[in-house]
Length: 278
Image (cartoon, rainbow, N blue to C red; front, side, top):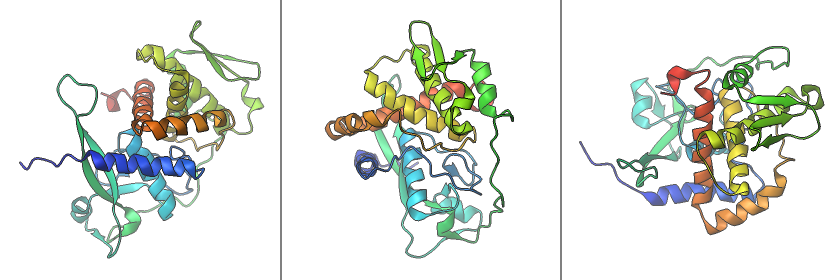
């Protein structure tokens, strides 16, 4: 078997592009919700499994938005060929990275670059897309509602602020009718659930880093559960400048936050999808 090429520069290139998006006012971890898109997260067309790794998710979401692609289906040229697909001439691939893990290490020792193409860049493959967007209503229980109940994390409704008490291990959330949309309410709950996972995953870091992790993780979690992005950044806008300063000094800051966010999301999802989080 041929030894894969280790290329850390590709990882840095992706991170630089995502940070540049932040400077432009584009939040790369927020999906521009597409009606009719059957994917929740960027998904491999053949395996139907989401691409793991927070940076890969953000990069492919950004590429989908920039390219105005109608779905989040991606695959390598060889994978597309297996289903009769041919990459169209002059189409440019999007790069993602696969981490290389050393035994006993929790930090990747390197990254293998992988080039993928979106379904829209391929001919010969047809996908039947839904004709109408899903409907989200507070009176209809979703997988997210079931997840919240299954975690056993106490959520107290009332007041006018979203917050998590580290001392009490309790999330405080305003009543649902106080939010403009069901998605906005879910995002508030998801954000506090991400904070609750910190103690459960033995994660200790600075407040700003943990806020970045919770912000990214909340959006990832809701996308996994099929809840559209609420578009609300009001509670976190004050952190954006700080995050940008940190990313300027440390390009790996965003990657670390995204990877920890993905770890928290996996922890929460196992309560409703134990078979997919093993």
